[in-house]
Every structure is written in C-alpha cells, then in structure tokens.
Image (tube, rainbow, N blue to C red; front, side, top):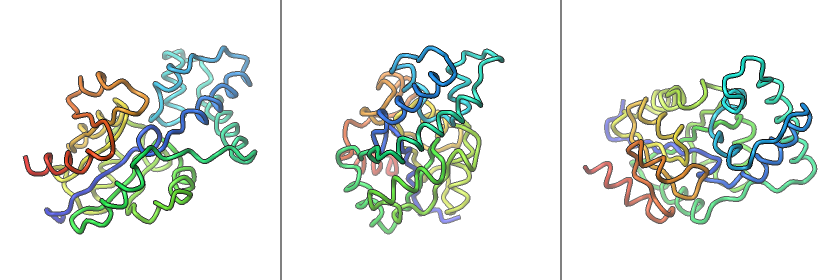
Length: 224
C-alpha cells in the first residue's frame, strides 16, 4: 500500500452528471408499465445512488409483495429505449470536466468512480464526455452491494493500493456519505445534487457549492 497515494472517488448521477430527466422519465415508464401510481419527482430522486432493485425496494416501503425486481427490469428497458431513441447523454455539471482533468494530472492523486449505474452505463457517459481515461478504478452496481454498503470503496482502495486515510468520496446523497464513512474514508458532499445540503451536513460531511472549491477542500482534509 502506497501511504502517499491519494484516491478520490466520485459518484456519477447528481455529482458529475445531471441525469434527473432520464431517471425520472424511465422510472415513470416502469411504474406505468406495472399499472402503479408514479411517485412524485422528489421521491424518485431521493433514491438516486442506490442500485436499481434496492431503490425500488425503498420506494416500496418494505412491502414484500412490491415488484421491485420487475420494476428494475422495466426501468432498464425504458432507459435503454430512451437512449436508443436519441435521448441526450446526461450533461456534466459546470466545472466537472475541468476539475476532473486537473485532479487527474496530479502526481499524488488517482481517480475512481462508485455509482449505482451499470459498468456499461457509466463508461458510456464518461467516454462521451472524454473523461473515461482519467479514472483508474470504476466500481458499480455490477460489482458490489448497493450503497451505503462500503464494498465499492473498499474494492477501489484495494485495487489502487490507497489507505482509507488518503481516500475521499465525493457525492450528492446520504448514501455516498454513509458509504465513505463505513469504509473509513472522508466524505465530501456537493450542494447541486439530489439530496438536501442539510441532510449531508447532518452526517458530518463538508458540502461544497461548486467544483471550483473541491481541490482546496481536498487539500484541507489531507493536511488536517
């Protein structure tokens, strides 16, 4: 393990890219296909970050008869159909590309991804925006249990040889913050995503207002 190596793990949806339109549209189609009432937009966005089946289980409020797995399959089909019909690739948030590129150039830093997306989905988005090559480790719902389980972060740390003390997770949801803390890593919340700033701060995470303040926040964490 390289004690000097710093690992920054980014969430994708709600952190790097704004995917709410595609997510909510695909989720609505999944509910409609099952003849179920579509949840409010805020409710649908509240589960972004979880793996699909787990997300639908949460939306089902623990009802054992709720068709979480079937809804997840319908969601995947709807999402892929939207993409095939020419739906736009999720746009990057302002400053995301420049910040990722700048961090990737640092000799003491490697970058990773931990996302509820599939490997196919996240690689498609990152490649579209010219960022895929900046990430040396990508962990998804295909590889580990759903957030907030720490598996994705632990696997990423093992893969690159980084210590928990030198690992930071950047995300927009309470699931990202809890995942980081469970892995012994430091969390940083972002204010532009799908969970309220107050919810992230209640878990003890510093919250940044823009990508311009990410690198100074990272340096403060690593020098404290």
